Image (cartoon, rainbow, N blue to C red):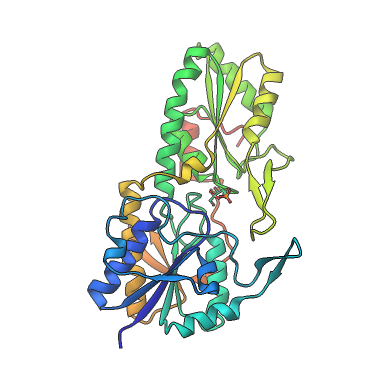
Length: 363
Ligand code: F6P
């Protein structure tokens, strides 16, 4: 009997999800003669038994498509599944239902593509007997156990294009322009797009900022005849001793806080301290859209391929990760529930400082 695997995409979407699904299905069918089913909307599909068969035809032509043909959910935690009862959300443990459906379908393994939330749920289900392999995705690049997630490079390209384009208006109108990027509690996207796009000031969650240092940098640029400044800020950035700016709370999500809006706060503060028009562009979900870059397509294809190889080798409980140029599996147990933040001594930060980029701090 052939091996049968289930695959799902969980958490926020990002470019490259379809490239992974395609790689999983093609490797499974062509190399190993396995059968593949795809669960719809992340863990929701496994719990509600919503799935589709995935064959060659189903994954044909999806390599370059953003989003995910399987749909996703960042609310479907099998251990804390939200249900509306009498107009109130209650949370129930539906993990045993997930295991029942996995068994009823005769699955030998589950490949879960997702971020920290998906890996944490997968780890919980592994303890209930599901044999799983994880694949790390997120534009935030904040997953522990891998040097890079797929999705990051595509979001970085979009953010860099935006910072590039902001330059013309900043320069023509002698303004301070603030570009806010996603990234949650990690500054990878802000740091990399700020450097690649030629930003003057980069603010990341890992380095709380001092407003006076930011304003001094802008004034110094003005004195040097650069009558404009570009600030790239991660949504999780905050002042020294200050708080995160929360855009909204999503009660039904395991990660209830949605960040956003720090750029608006900063622009008012900068305008009140120095006499310069300060404008804001918040990139938000634009960063999750569009076609994956060539790099992300390759990484996604390698990850998908490696995940199926692990299944074929009977090696479970692992997440495929990138270590340097190589794909190395790491135990999901070690990854679940952990973030990978920008280290304070990051080589990127040091290089950025050497070329005059300011982080709004004295480090
Ligand atoms: O984790 C990816 C991400 O896009 C974060 O950068 C962002 O904070 C969050 O998801 C937004 O989530 P939602 O799509 O629920 O608004």
